[in-house]
Length: 73
Image 1 (tube, one colour):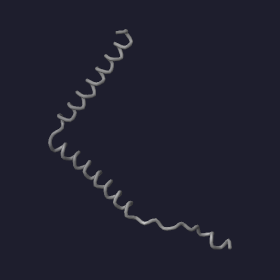
Image 2 (cartoon, helix red, strand yellow):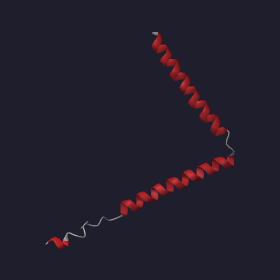
Image 3 (cartoon, one colour):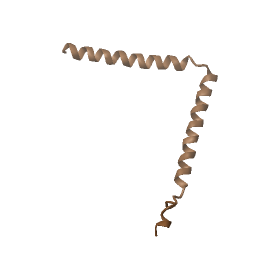
Image 4 (cartoon, helix red, strand yellow):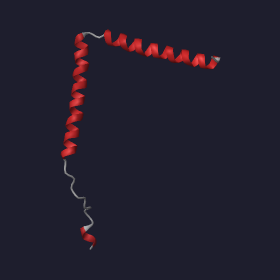
């Protein structure tokens, strides 16, 4: 294996290890109360997105007529 490829593989493995272990450590370091709080915030966010999607889907577009268009005739 060429040296450059070996270095690239090692960097990727190190990055992968850092990402996976730090995220897991951060998640398990939270208390159950903090997890519920974060879950509640995410739930409110998702409910807001769903409500906006339903609102925009059911909204009927009105034809656009500029204010000055009638007076040009």
